[in-house]
Image 1 (cartoon, rainbow over the protein chains, first blue to last red):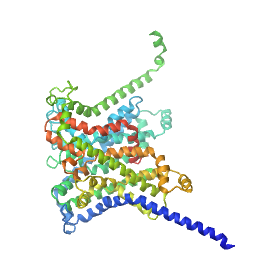
Image 2 (cartoon, rainbow over the protein chains, first blue to last red):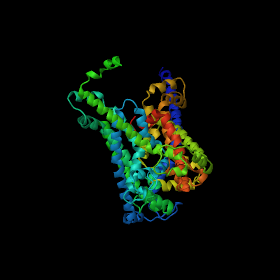
Image 3 (cartoon, each protein chain N blue to C red):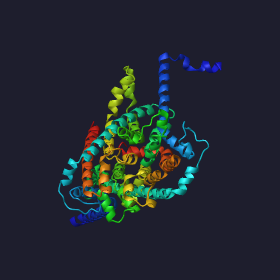
Image 4 (cartoon, rainbow over the protein chains, first blue to last red):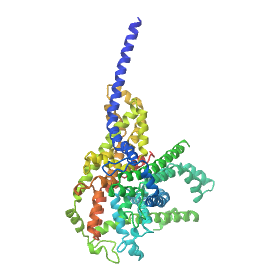
Length: 302
Length: 290
């Protein structure tokens, strides 16, 4: 009696176990290709960079263990501090302006009834262009002799070769290129604010700037902080525009961390030392990312 | 005439509302003007590319090319490996797009729908990798690719671009929203996991797949730093890296430089203008807003 009851039960559980095992194998097959590439081309290099930073390796990866001497050299190297300060200066010139310009343009675009798609396309289009196209165009627009800007303003400034103006000019081009992304995110944020709040406030007699300060700005803060941090992380990795517009010049005035690492690694063959700069970059970006995760989680909880 | 003017309700509008409308009109006009200023550099590049070389530096500048001169385009197509770079870009960007979507979809499906050992650990690993910038480990990545003999090779260009966890996380979020009963019903009918993924889950996520495909393609096409480092052989270059070489070769021939820029900008610009809504969806998804 007991046996006949338990027998089909055991059969089912065995079949189920088989099924579970089969699903487990399928899962592994599905995960394996991505996981393999991920481990080999992302995780392994980011561990290897830590190890390389402790060696005097060249670009073949061969070198002796030298302890922390690369780090000690880095801290004594004025060029490193120049690159770090330039990177921070670039961040200062891009992150907040890009956010504010994005917000301002989003507010202008979102209130349009007709032409909305067209106007948004005008602001977003630069974002989908390759960086070298963007730099080519601005090299022409800001050309010191024949550029349209200097022709119209009767200026002879060589924007990307001027020690004072090179970095602001690169930052300006960056804002022009990337602000469309921020506009999109801000518009999404603006559309998420329930219109009832505005109606209620309007009934209370609030208008114009008051509405913006008391309703739009606080309700938009989660999106704003997201944008600020996305940019902070992105701009630490600045390389392309600087390399193409100024190559770090004049007099290292636009030399940024990644460009410094590139020079040391690929032009001077100092793989170990370049890795040390890479580690510094990684630590800084990881810190900013953790900050982002914390801020975003707080936004979700609220 | 008279009937129209009496029919207009404008007469009954109070002065303050009329002022607000006027103000609204002014702001709209300024917005449109600003948009025009914003795209002006693109217009200027296009106009310059259609001028004869010595007209580009005319003072005062002409804002409309007269006559239209296409010689810069025929010149660059005949005298630079532009077509070759185009084909390289199309091939590598398509390969990146297809593989990124396929690998991420498979990985995300398993993470979302199958309870296997190490699932939690794997998701945690993905989130960590999310924060790791590949730019920081450029040197070891190059050393690795070099050791594998993949420098100047499209495999060396493509493979590292597939190691992006972003698409996996986005797909997982979408798969998580599908009620598990849907998959279970198919499994009872005897469908395997692959079948469930491709005939139930994928069609339900078709719109995000298309959006991700377009955004991934644009990003792959525009990628600069890695192709710049891993490809050195001129015929192997992709468009964004290739055109930086042409520019220096032309010197002050602005019409030719701009013709090159316009040609290189065309695919992604057109992709955006045609698939505007999909691009927006994709951007939102990658920013974690959707």
